[in-house]
Each structure stands twice: as C-alpha cells, then as structure tokens.
Length: 276
Image (cartoon, rainbow, N blue to C red; front, side):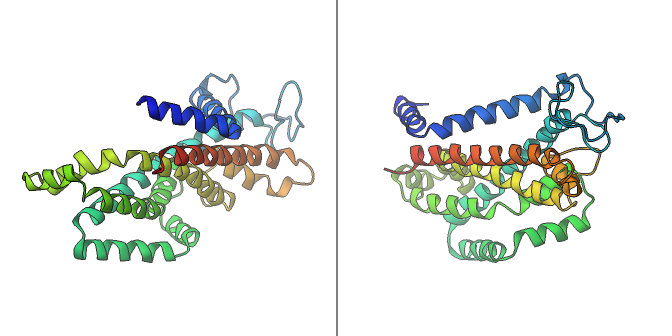
C-alpha cells in the first residue's frame, strides 16, 4: 500500500467516525465467529431452563428449548458471516470475469453478456432465490451458491465500465500489439488495476449477502436446524415476540450492526479509491 493511499485511508476514517466503529464491530464479530469453538457452552445443548430471560448464567437468555442464546448467537454469526464472505467471493469472481471479458473484447460478446446482465437484474431476485431453494436441498453450501449466482451482475457492470477505460491505456495497447493473449492482458493488466473498485464492491456485497441469507432463513428457506444463523433465529422467534422479545432483539441487532458496519466501511473505501 503506497503512502498516498495510507494517507487517504486515515483521512477517510478520521472524517467518518462511524466507519471506525463499523470496522471494530466487524473485527469483533469475525473474531468471535472464528473462535466460536472456544466458547464453553454447546449451542445445541437442550435444558429445562426454557425461555429464561437474560441473566448472569445466560447473558442472552435461553430459547424455547433451553439452549444458551449467546452460544446460538455466536455460532449463528459464524454461519451468517461465512455465507456472507463466501457468497461475496463467488459473486465477485463471476462479476469480475464477466465484466472484464465483456468490456475488453467488446463487439457482439459485450452486447450478449450485457443483455444477459440486464435481463437478470430486471428479475425479482428474492423470488428467484425462493424458486432455486425449492429445487435445491437447504443448507449452507446451497445458500452460498444461490446468493453468489444472483448477486454478481452489479459488479459485472462496474468492472465492464472500468475495463472500457483501461483498455485504451498505452500499456494495455502495447501488450496487445506485442502479441499477448486477451486473457493474459485481462489478468495481468486489467484486473490488477481495477482491484480497488473490486474491493469496494466486494465489501458492499458482503452486507447484501448477509441480508439475503437472513431473509431466506427468516422465511424458513435457508439454514436447516439445529444449525443456527441470525436469520433462522429470527424465524424461530416469530411466535415469541410477546413473551420472549429478546429472542428476536439479539439476532436482529447483530444483523443490523453487521450490515451497517459493512456499508460504512464500503463508503469510506469508495471515497478513498474513487477517481479524483
């Protein structure tokens, strides 16, 4: 990272205090997810202390099966963040590949690929997710695949626009004249130079993926019990809002804080990397 970029990042975070808070929260949630097995309570252990309000023994209380809710939230965060990051990697990889090929090759290839992108972006994403989920067995892997394959279009359009600009630069033109293959030019010269844009888009896509997973799980179409995610915990809490509201409050707050944190982080990165 060059000195100018470091300086811009410091200025960006100084001018946006909420982004610093968001970065800290993301770090805490990610660390908690990674170190979840160190938590001494089994998230699936059933007890007779059912729907126990938060107390010293159970800081987040217990659910309707007597399971420690803090443990469920920690492991639920592990699932939600895993899906968010893996779906982001998948969607970013597809979007970067399609967008760079479309912008660099141009012609009929660009027309066909962009019309496919336009068609997919015009369809109701959540409805497609529900239909795909109906034909695939529920589980973490399939949720990642569903979200990843339905969120790459916006990245593809952004990467295509950047590629159209970069392919006219002197060093790219020289590489093409010198006989380098199209794919070598794309992976050697185009993608490395649009990496800042990709990073910003990927950051925002994590938040989008977490929201999509939460929505699927909330409607009972995502994660299979006893595996927990924040969305599936909200789904389980629907009938307990009057008697045990904390069952919905804790996972709801965690989803809200995570999504907002990624959005603020993406906003700072966008301001740092956007062309001046």
